[in-house]
Amino acid sequence: MSSRVTLRQIAEKAGCSRSAVSYALKNHPSISKEKRAEIMKIAEEMGWRPNAELARQMSLVRSTVMKTDLPQLAIVINRPKEIMEGEWEFAPVEQLKGAARYAEKMGYGYDVFNLAEDPLSPKRLKNILIARGIEGIVFCCTVDPELPVEYLEIGKDFACACSGIRSSTVPYHAVLSDFLSGGRMIIKKIMEAGYRRPAILMPRGLDEQLGYAFTGGVSSGMLDLALEDRLPIQHLGRTECFIPEYEFDRVKQWVLRNRPDALVSTDVEHGLELIKELKEEGLDLSLYCLDWFPKFKDVAGGINFRHHEIGRAAVDLVVAQLHTGRKGLPNVQRCVIVEGIWSDESKDPLL
Image 1 (cartoon, one colour):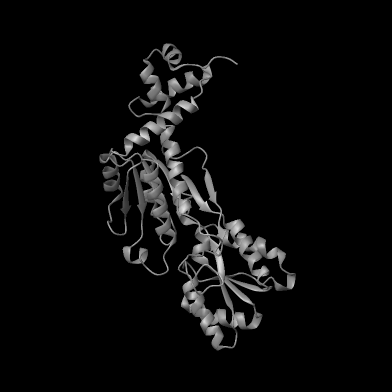
Image 2 (cartoon, rainbow, N blue to C red):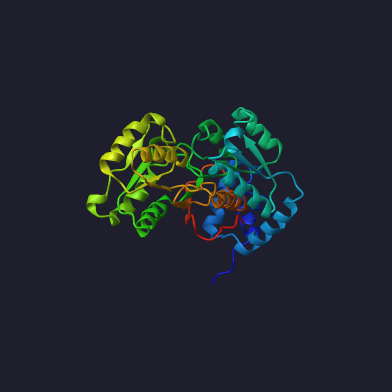
């Protein structure tokens, strides 16, 4: 094996100092863009590779120092306080908690920016991030509402990752729920409980924002059902992320005609209201939740997508970029998929 190419050798060929090479290979803005490109090209031609063990040791040193330094990460969310504290809210709250706790555990300080509570302009937000020495951003891009694209654009000057949803307009690395395995799991669990003819009630606005990922998961799971028991998935509403009340009458008539033995939805609040009305019509059904939260006491079961783990993984993606000097839009978007668990499985610790 040939000996490792050193920074000093690269510096000699590039005609610059060793420290300039070090900064350039970290893509540091203190070196001009042209000089960075030149040094990176020379290093690549010479066969230079980063020392992974040294990078790991240095990251541990930096994380120790950062505990007393200025905040290094920003967590950006767009959710009104009254909604965050509401009975049915869970995903963005847990993603935020997971990101914050893991950032602290890794030795990073953090600031939370809730645009719904403090409506900063994109320019103002960017200036604050720069002034505070923040280098990385976790965008809690949970749906309803997704963060406006003009705020996502800010991240092009930082190391970034999105949690919960990915943006097709500004494709940073993202962390998503494993909707495919979750959809298959819920159909399997329903069948194990003795049900054979579930009805899937899907809010169109939510599933559309996720590229119909929920639909894909449950559709693959329904292949295990008998052909005559595969009821067509009911996409409800227009742009809503919940089952709108104006759909209730139509859905009730559809359910009464097709006689399912269980209901599956992402919307527990309105799903329970619908079940109550169906019971008055003489049909008693159980509700299963495709995005189950611990607060849901009146459902038969569901998929816990462990949103705190989604927030935690988003921090991991940002920290990895900081350690390698990368920022902005990646050449290839990476999506980390977090596995869900069944709601009655053993407690899943936050960290």
